Image (cartoon, rainbow, N blue to C red):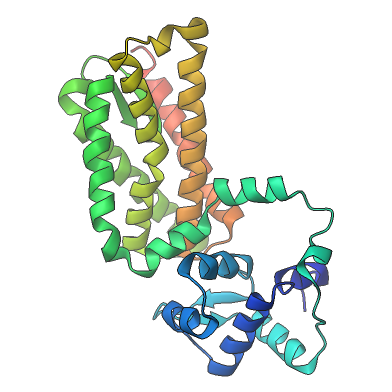
Length: 280
């Protein structure tokens, strides 16, 4: 096994994850529904454990879960008894639970895996994100240029165009970079859907700004304008991490590779903003 043994022990420290390895080793390929039924757990729990097994478990072209080459090695080791059963608390000792939770919140791959399992079921939510996002963009006076919210006079007339155009351009850039850098062409529809969901923090920032205006609170004037800057920056950063998780899940890339793509798009957004819109 090429992966560090401590990492493998950590991944297999939970009996559910060991059982997933054994089931996939015995059946070859299983759908998420099959795994949920066999394990008798909910979808949230399943995707949480699958996310921790990402180097050992992957999906084939039919969206079935299968073992990777390393996963098959681990399966053989588990069935031979070469991988001992280790209590999860023992393996995780010394790891900060707060940092682990923060990692799951910042890069919620199980959330996107759940959405991508049946992507057509979530089209209504995606439509609502665009609908509400364009409306609160109009009300707040802010528009989106790729991932950067900006304020200028033309936003009221073109709020939906800016939001939808930014989503589509972010999707296209993610798709192109995934293909050019890592030769990944599958999962286009899932990536488009995930890109829309990744814009939720941006939409939330517009909601906060609008609520401030609605209740007579000039957020832009608080603490010399720093409050609004912090809100926008935090929402942008979270949007970038959500986009990385979406790319990782849709294209089956490691999160560090997906983060490279999302950070490249963030950098391009800054360049576009500084070149075309900074004067506004």
